[in-house]
Length: 455
Ligand SMILES: NC(=O)c1ccc[n+]([C@@H]2O[C@H](COP(=O)([O-])OP(=O)(O)OC[C@H]3O[C@@H](n4cnc5c(N)ncnc54)[C@H](O)[C@@H]3O)[C@@H](O)[C@H]2O)c1
Image 1: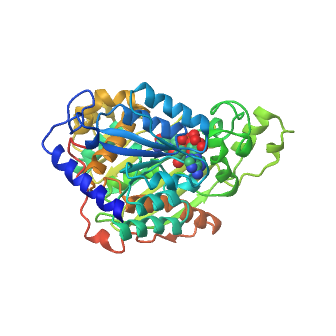
Image 2: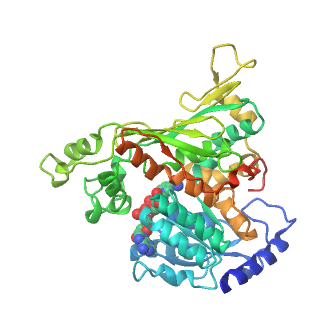
Image 3: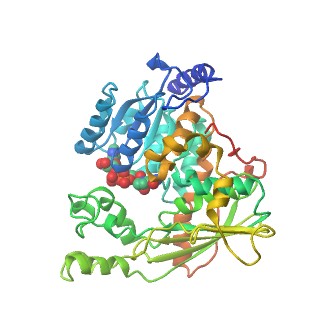
């Protein structure tokens, strides 16, 4: 673990240097810009659409060097290099000769932290290798595909002491953070029930013409590009909530999961799956070979989760039918509730009895300190600004080598929804027990301090 130690020293030194220097506008973050050695050196594994987006976001900071990039697709390397050169940064080391060339990136001394934005089946093995190499690890969502992989992440973190952050950007959405602020200030009272989900018509993402990522054609797998090249196969073969973390991450944090609370069991049900087939027939004709495929994934998958402290959460996966986007959040306590659909709030004793308030005033009143401070900068960063904050939290945590806000136990517990929902659906909705990835430590672990304006 030589790398690990030298990186620790780097991080210790820079943390001291950075202490006390406040964050300034124009993306000056905590450290002076005079010496490149004082910056966090980040390597990127996977620079497809998402990875490139992260590259661009870190290029807007003055405390990060992009020292290495890896992708098996030369085109994607070219696009990322172009962004890096335009920002005047030195040319990074390039990897991607084969599927495992990322391991050579991980061997570099000039990489302190990595951001992994590859297809799902690569996430855990790359993250494990990264932690083993002592690199502070950022992993795109979802983190793992099987329960074994969830444990692999936890075990590798515990063996090496290397941190992993799941890069769940929705936790940083402005309304979500304002509602988290309300939760922490006890506006809803004792919490009782939550809803969330991934309700996003992805038909134009799951299929394309092999040339344009979104919107044209009905091809996938070898004939598709970007997400259709790998994501659609999961809909073909798995009847499960394969993308749980956007809907679950925010409510799990509000409910202190893994920190004084935990998921205990779930039960899932799936509807029939007709949406993807209809889309292929409509756009490619009923004679198209893909029109004959039977997609295993139900169009609407509903999971009910129980927690140790007696709350329930209803999580929905709804990606194969025509519908406008919504993550469908609801946060409900003894005193009232927020529902994102309808943008409405009700707090007993403040709202007119039995009438919804428009949520805007509430969300403004409880705007999160981070959004108050960085909101203007963040707005250009993608996905309504939340991508800025998730990368900000990653970089700031990595610079100090401290546990990130969304850690390996969160990554494991949230990702476990996929295999557990699959088992439950297969068994007519039978309840499935959640593994306790903290091995009992959830009882002692304290909630993360979210209400601050640093990161
Ligand atoms: N948080 C969000 O809002 C959000 C948005 C989009 C995607 N994502 C997640 O980001 C990840 C990537 O999605 P994407 O849309 O960028 O997909 P993509 O297909 O555009 O990019 C994946 C990249 O990984 C590369 N790759 C595949 N195998 C590799 C290997 N062995 N070594 C190196 N590179 C390899 C591919 O060539 C491709 O360029 C997924 O996990 C996805 O779920 C998250």
